[in-house]
Length: 407
Image 1: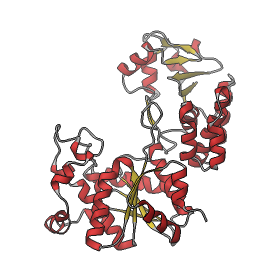
Image 2: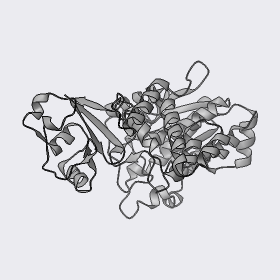
Image 3: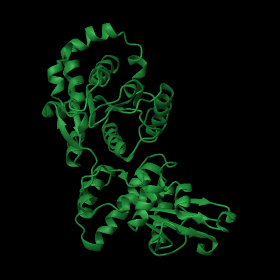
Image 4: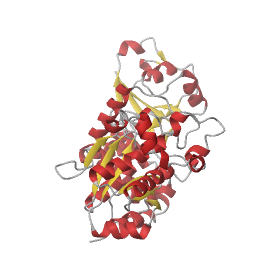
């Protein structure tokens, strides 16, 4: 049977690894418990998280045991990695709610049945720690001078770094130790921005338990233009269909940059690599076929076959100018609202397409708002009954966001 390490490497997931050959050998000869942490900073996982979920699926398929760690405790501190300011502090109630949503979503992808994957919450052991005992038993193993040279802290020194945030690495490292002791966890996986924190945990377990454990990071999901995958002008691409409908996810993937098609097919689908390379090599108009497959496969994996097919049909209908657009997000509004007319900015705000009038003005000035394929040229435009065709209008925001209004 093929070693999962080779699968992950061929598909382009792996970034950095401790003792690469040792870890590859271990993954090839026995079932290895491993964990990935998810700090509960929102009430839904994102498309960026989906890369980590894909790794967990590959690992579980190969016979290894996933441990999904919900960061109910570490979220109360906030990871300073990649941040220029301190994270917003969430209440315990908000964190618990977010963690419960994560648990539900992860269960759609990972098998948590008897003897399969495990899901735990680090709030169960971090919230009741005795400070002096923790610092004596764990803190003694961390060198402050060395920690300050890690990117996650070094980039914050000039703007100020609180001791509160400085403790994050100790907390995450303790997670690895706890999971090693409770579940014989031998491997921590995470994004490349977590390397410093993961090295802390890997070293802590090796020092205290005198056993071989490992850390492996995978590349962050980024586009060829350098932006973080799943981040758009309209906001984050969420896995929760109430926050990002399947149609919007489909359209987002369908509009992938030509340069990213092969990479995203490799990382976000289970298509064989031979097929991935064939599709990625298409050029000109032909590459759109690959994008269609990418959009369908990702939407199907996240939301199921039926919703992916509906999103695909709606996309084709929209492209051809048809009106079978059942999957496009829509809002039903009273016709009385449009008898005297409603300002375009007020309508966009009502539909949740903009957060403020200033955002709406900027979009309109840049030609970013259209109604039934006609660009809106004035922020003073009123939308009235005369603008509706068969009781509906289709608003387009930017290149990818569509919203239908029905009366």
